[in-house]
Length: 337
Image (cartoon, rainbow, N blue to C red; front, side):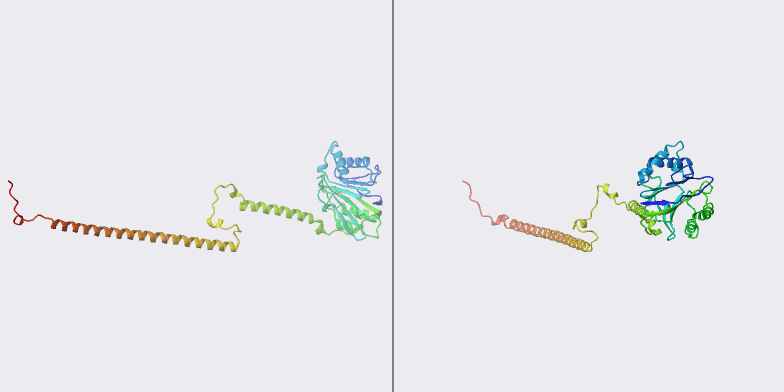
């Protein structure tokens, strides 16, 4: 992508800094920050080590951050910083802390890019980064060391076609200086005006809903995980796995169909009724057999008693018929010689 820019417009601050200053000749690297040491270390390293007629990448930015970490007072992770690097791929933007970068398209008076909509770079986890490849003639890029700058007021001023950049700067200073940084001082800002661009994509700004879609997705993932954890804690589905004595009802082994199946439940009920009827029939059969045995035993005892009585009567009768005759009826015995 090829483009040229007008000279940057600066809004200076008593507490924050904006680079490059007059002693620095490369206006393709723009930085605002509340930490002058970190800002200068980043600017010097990028200016000395990278050719901006090539694509500036995340790896290049993180290499520059590592160099800034080796400065005598490394406070990269605590500072507010906004960086813009014009390169062959477009404009590389990095935002850290409570700073802000946004792109205003004067032809539509829309904000085409806002660093607040970005998430932390997964590679570095230090900054929100973006390579803006959609740059058109008369676009403005605004870097501010405070994130609460009045975006609508800035956009309205930049879209005034009747004003030149110097007049716009005067009005912008009034708006920007109403904002206060975390150090309770007015912020520093840089306004970069694209004079001519070739190779821009001329895309429409995505709606706010799409910009926040990733945050909605993160919230849904967290909610799903929380729901699963709650279910595991409340229902304890694995609590019975360690119990060796697992009781099973006889009905449960009748079939391997799902226990909540209506047909399966009906079959279980029928099998249970049949089994109960068979058990009752067996009990009745056993009771009838016991009664029959008792009756036979009682009858046998009665017959035996009658038989014994008859035998006693017969014995008595036989004894009466075999008694000896009286003396008068006895015949004389012959005398012995």
